[in-house]
Length: 239
Image 1 (cartoon, rainbow, N blue to C red):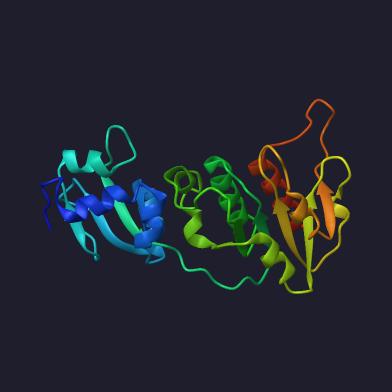
Image 2 (cartoon, rainbow, N blue to C red):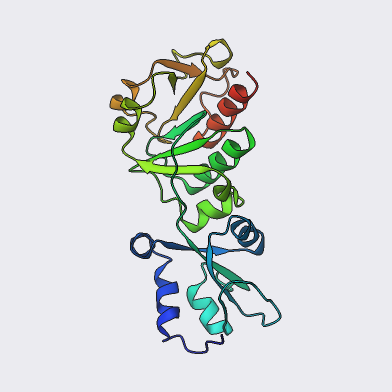
């Protein structure tokens, strides 16, 4: 289908999806970049394709638009060549190792954690209610499309941790008093990563059974949340 007017109702909805409140309302989000769109296609989450290239053909509803429309809905200053409209991802029950994020605010950190969680065989990611939006364009790009390959749930952290199965050990991070992650024994774990500036909240700390740290030299006091989470997941994956 060809669209030429920026006043078209479809175009207005697509533009609104750049804002979290409308992503929540419509239960949809935008994906820019052909690689990311291909990852979404593999998981059958796409509802529509928007493109300026009439030579592109897909098995889902496809809208061919002009540059003016594309620049209106794209997050990129120069506009994109193709954008996917995806339904929000299904939340599933957790089973294996999980990573729990307490007030992570940086989109790049969240995207990095998603990529690492997939790479190191974690089953699920739990987003606290104050975390950056999963469907933020920067998060999607930083994840390199891996958000389509892992279970991600947003929930109230304290309630989630308190109701977690008893065979899980909940591991927080503490650069001063933590144990070496290699020395902590467990069958299944929930690693909890705190806010970039403030770390874990006191209420979340109370839910933790153990605290881990990452060995480093004295020149560096700490690592950012994305790097710390990635190293810890790597170590757990190689138990």
